[in-house]
Image (tube, rainbow, N blue to C red; front, side, top):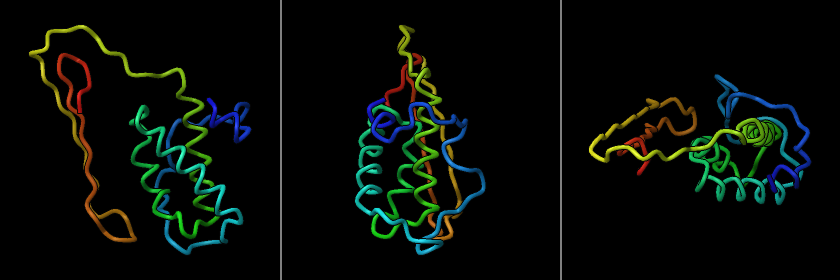
Length: 134
């Protein structure tokens, strides 16, 4: 909430997705963002927030790749993350007291989708007894 207050986004519009679907952020694409320090500070705060908000980890990683020369398009992506966070403040992870013998895992992968480096990206989570552990 402090980040939303600082950026004057408390009364902003909400979005349901962390990043605009089918948008590929590229380096040196579009008009240069004028306030490099502001971009770096806000992305740094979002990076710190990923410790407690794992659902934004991937998109914060994406916007972190442009810290040296962000464009207006990259800034718009950061603002969209903030709008998502505002809409998701009511949602949280709940740890339930279930038998610890139940283990469930989920994974996802993105095969060379990034036009920058064509790298493979994957993610996973492991739940034991309904509680996320990794």
